[in-house]
Length: 333
Image (cartoon, rainbow, N blue to C red; front, side, top):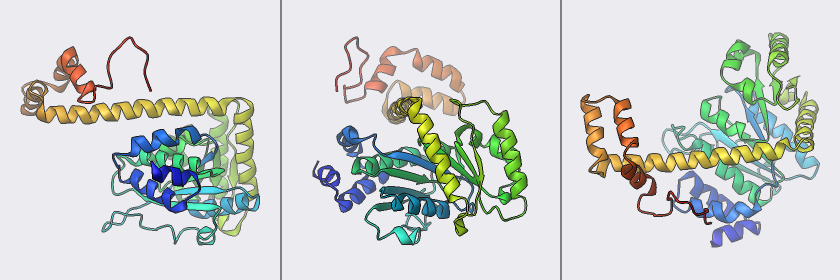
């Protein structure tokens, strides 16, 4: 594909166009991902998440400045609220991190949520892959909030930084939101505000009580990103986490697990699409759906009967492509 070839040669316009195809769910996305796959794995991925207003964009800006001063290139994926009119990213590339916009060593892409979480995780991961294949040393993913899909996105990063502010509320709710499971670094931003010390102390207690992951104890760092306070400590913690992952081979294991997770997710999505199509057209599956809708049979019993019909399941999984078969032969690629 010419567009991929141009992107791999360093064409920024081609990169932007490929990102648009990924965001719009173009039919050629699988082919794009196949072509760039040999060029993946070089970029280090940093996820930055937290509630709205926590200062994630400012922190991303400051970290990018540090990396650029070291001569490293950076790709930034900023997930924004969507415009209710255009569906595009509301805040936009040009408003965010303006000092980096004209820097050829930084590529910023804002992605709108478009009012739905459905394809956000997969689209974001594919945009990250494009930046990786393009040759960026670092890819930073900044999410708009702390929804489950966004936790999935950030969880796919090599290092995940969770940014909180005293106004974020009870830190117990933070733990319930799943942040304790993904956080490799906790940052209490706007630490000059009332309640910052208490929040940091509570987080430190939670970290000590939480099960240790690969021997890493999540640091809690107080910062004022707007005033460039704590940025050096945050960057140091990120680098220490990276060193730990690389020295212990945990980085490779983590990436392998996420590739497996992505494969299962893609298969499940494809089967779901085919199942929905079959529910509208299939002479066998359609009546089951109608009976469930009419209340004549409960969904569990219908599902059990459908899954017990091997011919029906095979037709749903294989579809018209004929490429996904139950076979004793090895998978051909």
